[in-house]
Image (cartoon, rainbow, N blue to C red; front, top):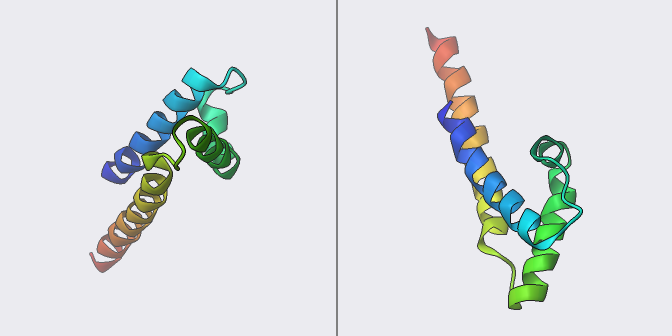
Length: 81
């Protein structure tokens, strides 16, 4: 459950940013089915608005790695019992 929360925080932040600056942002569930497409849109919009890539772009990759590690650790701990 903790892994899901770690993944969800940057996704919600990116979704909020896209919703604020882009009228064509779909609902939240579609964002999770095509994350690479929306990450590219987020990166493009933040570069246009601020001149550099937004912080949640890199945080999404970091949180995805942490989430995968926590899931694998959970599976490993369950297999030991």
